[in-house]
Amino acid sequence: MIPVNPLGVGLLYAVLSLDHFSFGPLLLSRPLVVGTACGWALKQPAAGFEIGAVGEALWALVPPAGPRQWDVGLMAALMAAWLAGDAAPAAAPRWAMALAGLIAFPLGLLGRRIDGWARKQTRPFAAHALEGLSRGSDGPLRASLFATALLWVFKSFLVFLVMESFGGALWDWIASRTPALFQTALERTWFLWMALGAGALLWQFIGRWPARSLRPGPAAQP
Amino acid sequence: MNRGVLARVFLRSLWLQGLWTVQRGQNLGCLYSLWPVVDRLYERPEDRAEVARTHAGFFSTHPYTAGVVLGVVAGLETDRARGNGPSGEAIAAARSAMAGPLAALGEAFFWSLWRPLSFLAAMALAWAHPGHPGRIVLSFLVIYNLLHLGARWQGLRWGFRWRTDVVPRLAPLRLQRVLTVAAAAGALATLVLMIAAVATGRASPGLLGAALAAAALLRRGAPLGVLVAGSAAVALGWTFLGATL
Image 1 (tube, helix red, strand yellow):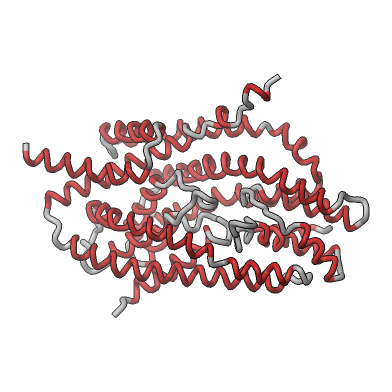
Image 2 (image 1 turned 180 degrees about the horizontal axis):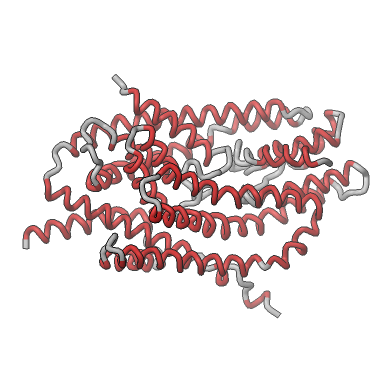
């Protein structure tokens, strides 16, 4: 039986994932927002916020839209859902967050490929919209926008449920058998990710120093 | 063209990314945004179809700076409908010419600077008022989107008012200088937060060193995914070696 909580969280994540597909982006699909929202829905707001904050810093280099974007919010949603499961320790210690992150990361990469495939399936809708416009009507365009948004929410919901179930089973199995030494190692991993997030944030500012990247080249100078 | 029509263009422009395709980019989102203007200017479906054909080519820009392009196109289409504007091809060419530079500006400012700056502001707030994750996330969204939505709306209005003169009129804003100052402020704020975390005992000096090392590795082109997995490997090795020795 599928528990009620993951279903609700899946729907919440699926609606928020629209943000990087068609509407906005208002940053609703970023890890900070998705992690906190899912954590709040699962009555673990502090854990959800910490997952979201570390995820947001770690993936600071991933833009919310455009060719380089991918759904980093999925990982935050999965981690928040697993941490609220039955096998999770009550206070969601950091080793548990790190373990969830290690399982969520490859699933996030898989989700990226699924997103790429799903985006290509919007072509028939685009053709339908263009056909309507060639008649001077924007009705089919509006219908196509609505239909693709609905399909995207459905896709995200399905992806979340499948990954939450399989990844969650793996997480439960490992979490209940993790010895103390591994827990220490995983806790250190979480702290290293925090440091990596801070480094990524720093690099986001220094590495894109606009004075260098936007300055005209020698040929453009008088 | 009244403010109500522009407001409808603005609201519709939030769907600019919808129906994005490799072949045509955001062209359908662009047409969807402009439709209230087209609808107002032309009564006959054939005329509206002609405008749609004009703008059916590839179009791609940053969604936040697209307001300027949409404003310019709406203004030029208004002139064309009145019989004193450029041809449809000239409008499409102006749209394409502006898309690239505006995309670069949006990428450099909103993605690379404003988003992490808003996040830093939220983190500073979390530090000052711990225990209110919902309010902090809400602050993050408000800080970020106030400027984002404001820039979209104002860009649309400027584009519509100044048409293709918008570029020389925006030049005195010295956007490059703004980008430089924002990047420096962001780097400084990140460093200050990191040092404060160490000074108050919330983080160890080793983590500060690890953060600086991570920034240096990213500078050398190390993929982030490898660093994430590498951190876990380092932590495992460190723990087991510590337990063994």
